[in-house]
Amino acid sequence: MHSKRISTEIVGDNAIKADIIYVSIGLAGESKKDADSKFCALAIACVEKTIRDCKNATGIEYPSYSQIINFIEKNRVDSEKQSNP
Image (cartoon, rainbow, N blue to C red; front, side, top):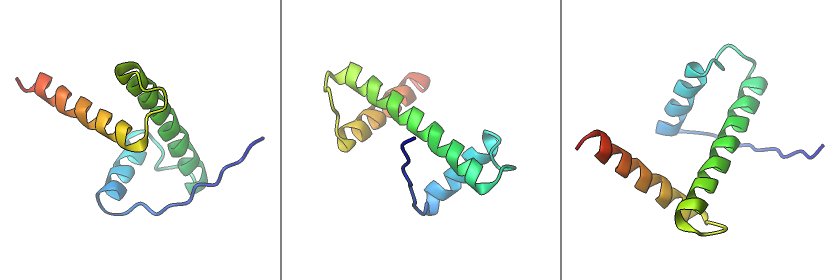
């Protein structure tokens, strides 16, 4: 089995957002290792979906980090405009 270790410290607003997500999806009661593994698995699945959506919307086969961030931001703004006409 292939293995990849990801180690980072999340700080500030992103740390607060991560805590909220952990609680809202039921990871708060799990061991740190299990909760972090599930959180990373969910994050990877979300990134894969976002990359697919970006590729489909832009036609860019291998979008860069900045292109994906711009795609996410554009969709966020468009979504806010639709919900607040």
